[in-house]
Image (tube, rainbow, N blue to C red; front, side, top):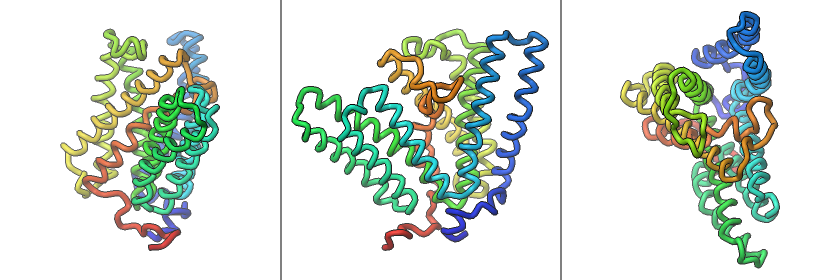
Length: 332
């Protein structure tokens, strides 16, 4: 596959069976869900309030699913751009709720850092991608000095660095997967397992979760839900991962099981991390952008820690994009 084909050609979108399975399965679920919810409502299996919440969430997924899967199917360029846009909007929500948006110079540096990360990913320029972390941290620290306001310097710099680490560096790893020849099944597999991890935690938590996991951080999360999600997500990730990484160094039961545990644990920690931020700020949701879900950060918080963890784990066994031309825009 040439670089141009990987970046822009959508005609080979369903060449890998996993891509077809996940896309078809999602379409089927979204088509059946409204009917199933209606049946449960008519039969009285669920309360009116619960039914209304499920309908709202389903409508949101009818909007979210194409935005998540569409760019991946269209080509790597669109996937990278989509992750870059997601990073910017997540930072916007973060800056608004923390008050960092008032620090225009720091926010400008963070935004420029995210844009440069997106460029480095697009150009498959891994050295720049890695270097941008210390360089942007230094730029944020230096820029904050220029205001000549020592009071609150540590807080301003810390908020800026945390914002770049989470939405520039961490989410940037999600986009970097698009530099791999096998990026479509990898990205769709990762998105599916992360989202199902949340579903598994919710269902098992409601079914047999009694002991609270972290009551001060997230009162609704239970130890039973966490363990249920850990087991089910590990099985799903390892089983489907066998087909995604077929006949590679990662295609071994032990390695795939560890990968599944990593996805579930990192996903749940990412969720708890954002809950900690919200509890610290005294808010329930980051925003009301997505009905039934909150803001973009409320919906995609699990990916923040999962993306770099899975990227480096997969990279250790298989590498990411090793057989693809690097620095094709700027040259050697």
